Amino acid sequence: MKTTTSQEHLELGQFIPFIYHHNMLADPARMEAFREAIAIAVPAGSNVLDLGGGTGVLSFFAAQRASRVWCVERNPELVQAAGRLLSINPGAERVEVIQADAFDYLPPEPVDVVICEMLHVGMLREKQVPVLASFKRRYLEKFGAPLPLFLPEAFLQAVQPVQQSFDFNGYYAPIPSLQDPSARHQHTRELAKPALFQVASYGESLPMDCAWQGEITITESGSLNALRFITKNVLTIVETEQRSIDWFSQYLIMPLSDPLEVTANQQVSVSFAYTLGDPIARLKPIVTLID
Ligand SMILES: C[S@@+](CC[C@H](N)C(=O)[O-])C[C@H]1O[C@@H](n2cnc3c(N)ncnc32)[C@H](O)[C@@H]1O
Image 1: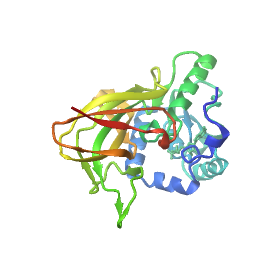
Image 2 (image 1 turned 135 degrees about the vertical axis):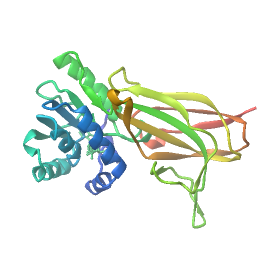
Image 3 (image 1 turned 90 degrees about the vertical axis):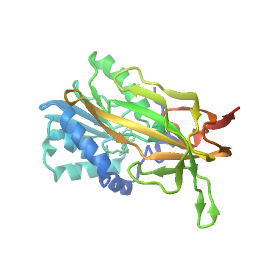
Image 4 (image 1 turned 180 degrees about the vertical axis):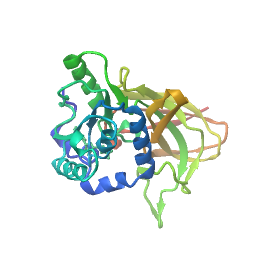
């Protein structure tokens, strides 16, 4: 069963404009993490499937190790771009670019690794989890066990109470925003440590929803007017070196409709519920003080 409507196909996230792919290619943290993880996780001579191939860059990384790579992309403009860009880079003869919906596509033969970068903070907006849940079900029906290795392998999600400045040259605009995880954020004050709310492994049974209620202890006094959502993608686990190669999605700052004045050591209750892949607007957290 498809989980996207034709209207959703047009939404940002399902349809990332070509110009935005430059930002992704130019993001050193993202590119270095994927390059290293793919070089380690893809066995020499293997079969690889890249779902949501975009410009083809992750298929290019995979083709440096694999003997066959299927690069699946739905947006025709990007299918064309991937074909052109791959053809001017080494390994193109090992990559087949296919215009298809990742909710339907299965490779012609079993694969060793599935790469899928339809990632967005909170597992919101993009369809990473529904796409991979659908893929796993259809793959097992067609080829049987074992499932391939997934890259990323897992994700961890956390939420953190913050005080955020929403002042823009005197214009007060409490709207959601994204933050570069590697930068310092002078307009954000952390009022508590991040609290883990979800951990999932793509090789195991995947959650379709995220419903959480938890208590968080405030460590800094301030005006709690937003929550920061943090998603860590475990791209691959390097068992021999007892480490993982991780990549953080951009942080999401979500303003609260009712800000709270809080003091250190107070406790707040935080709750939210959404379906993975939902638009950001469906995330409506509730924060209350615990007496
Ligand atoms: C975040 S981009 C990543 C692109 C590329 N893998 C990279 O790492 O640079 C996600 C890509 O998935 C594609 N996409 C989204 N939904 C898709 C679907 N259902 N089937 C195939 N491709 C899809 C988008 O068009 C976009 O190119």
